[in-house]
Image 1 (cartoon, one colour):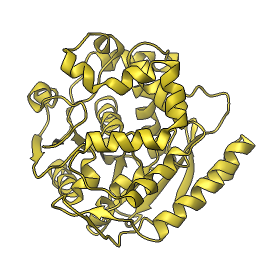
Image 2 (cartoon, one colour):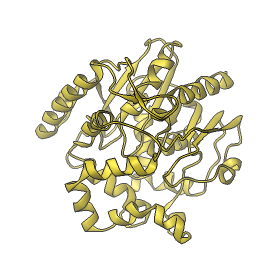
Image 3 (cartoon, one colour):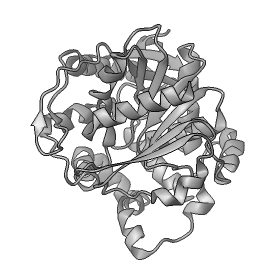
Length: 347
């Protein structure tokens, strides 16, 4: 395992040192305010991640936390945008208490995850993020794991499951099947659906790129509010995750992700074959549980639209009570239980 000083660029080495120190301050001291199971008021949690770790994995030096016994069956949890590893602050201890080894990485452009070379394209196409997940497993010597996530993280876990089923024991995916392609994304939607993607069109402009860079926290706080309209998170909870947006590549990664989806930015040729396969909508064959909150304010497909994409053992769970887009942080017990259940289903 290589530490943060293995990052080639001196400025990025300095960033990783600062990010790791900041993250240690937050995670070693326990979790900040979290929402109660009723989703109506903040409550306190004593959950602690422990030290932030770094490892060279593919083109990245990935920052991640690990909870639970090193000998436990591995579970990888992937966050989305604009969120970070703290979406799983309460999920991880529940799984670790059952003897699992829980690994939660910062996605590229978030937290202390940085590119090992300044010359590597700041690419956030879907195939690149999923490849990062496999590279992390390789770097940590993990042959097979349960994969789970939401938002970008759900898409990452989806792709890992369909492209590398031999590496994925089971899947938990918030909002179901999220794999797509540029051709499919080019098709116009009804006006009400297009309205939900307002930020995607904003990011397609140079004004949007400059606006996101100038107002990152304000923008992301707004997304939290719109995507989870009934989640009563407090400022301390948001600020804890906001430390992960202070990353030298954060803006570039976010902008590229949405521009690539619309065909306004190129990906890397090394992912062309993978993207061609993904554009065909391959099925998920491993045991899977999909989840949705009844108050998800972010764009998301109807469960009936993706049911046929899951051809292995499968269940869907709708969470009521005002659960929004950030389901693991808003309903940690339910998310953890889904992982426990699908892992047993996989045998």
